[in-house]
Length: 248
Image (cartoon, rainbow, N blue to C red; front, side, top):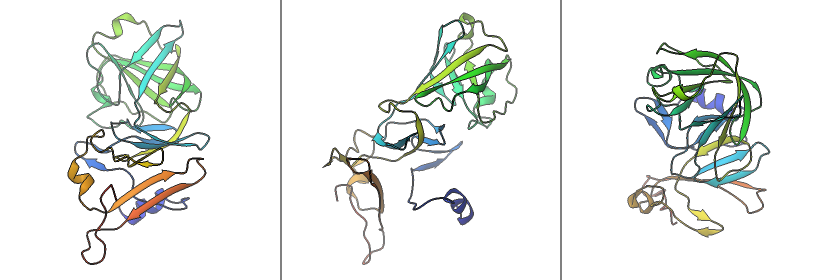
């Protein structure tokens, strides 16, 4: 919100439109996937999002986040969630965007990682070193290029991990296959393979949201991925602009 913040975000932009829906409950967050400079800020939900690969290719889809690590001895360490406290028998992953009393400081067990090689974990892999083990719930501030792998009370027993150990940390966001740089969520999809396909039910949005007239913002690209369209429809101004249904 505010001119100053918008101007800072758009400093090098050619054009701008509304992004994803935004929630401000316990913690301000977007409704769907958000990636900036190869760093995951908000995990994907069941709604469509637009992602850009590191080499600039766009893809619209409904994405899923899958994380994991490979320890130095070759064992796989499964990671079940992102920026949330783990259940008793699972590991979850926190990054530098999890800074509040509602998230990383709740994790009493786990280990802090520092990147030593690699650009991003999003459809890619980084090498990391274990900085410290965590055995009690004290505040932890993560810097860029650091993670906390938090362990549930019964999860850590099967793994012996010590400061100085190295591991490989990875993430996958199918259906995207290429390393990812940017993403913004939205929804629902209104076009699929060149045909109108208003998929509000699949993305858990209401019929009224789809069929009532509202101001709308849409994004799409040509089949050859050479042109990106940012489309805005004004609304809620009787006699001037009524908005559109998603079908329209």
